[in-house]
Length: 387
Image 1: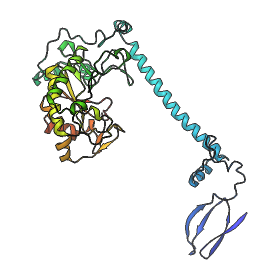
Image 2 (image 1 turned 60 degrees about the horizontal axis):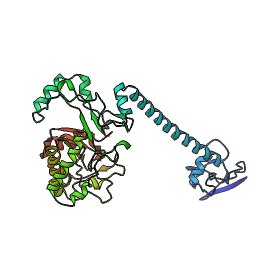
Image 3 (image 1 turned 180 degrees about the vertical axis):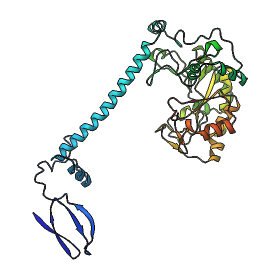
Image 4 (image 1 turned 90 degrees about the horizontal axis):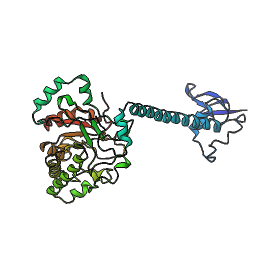
């Protein structure tokens, strides 16, 4: 079957379904054209382009052309093969992740001492397992004298140093029974206690079913913000901190003081500042004072910085001018630092295209340089992206 294709004054024969060069009226080649609309009688199922589950699916012309370039005769068959292989790939990845996590969990369980296994089997496990921390004979260090820390670091082994830069107690992404949300091993021989961190902003976080009903459900921080009462916030922090201390935690992962940027923020109820940085200045200071001086529990102010949404929080990029950062979003953090907060938690998000926990401008220049923060920075969980 042949026909003629005319362009300008030139007519050339065209064999339908074949690849032929197209010429302009001047005789020079313009572009190549593949005709996919010709005789396709050798494709018996050509009219059935859709999937079995979507028989009426109409494929775009360019998709049909791509399918026709693949080996085989039926577009429907090719579509089914592509769907099958895609599902197989995702299924393989999912099975691999589950398998690796089960191996990790089994390995961690098998290395537990017998006394720890017995302790977990009693069903009344509270705090950390036996032998995790030997704090009963430890002296209370003078943490305001920074020379004390430097001297101890010189006496620590490499293994003891590495303990201090990561937490323990997770099997994959699952917290194992008996551990705090953040558990950092201490060095008993040097009198350095374990760091036992727990969420959160509204009370001691329950991490397994056995803990449900054993903790106080305090009001959301935003409710306290609505009172505009710094003294009430201080009293609330002291009372909540005492419960943390009774349950063995010595650090609370709070207060969260990010200033609201949108009413749709997924964790707005946790943020003590509400929409007002000046209010955040007063309440952040009151919370840190009540928690650390009133209850004797270290506070970690979070999430530094510009972490104002939960949707895609690990990849979102906050672009805020320097002046606005300092006048609005940094103010509550500065207040907490002036009050002597023990730690600052860096966040998941990006700021000006760089992930916060690997952002030297935010952590070195802004936080440690201009704000004068001298204590520890703790990353949000799995927020470290750069070795």
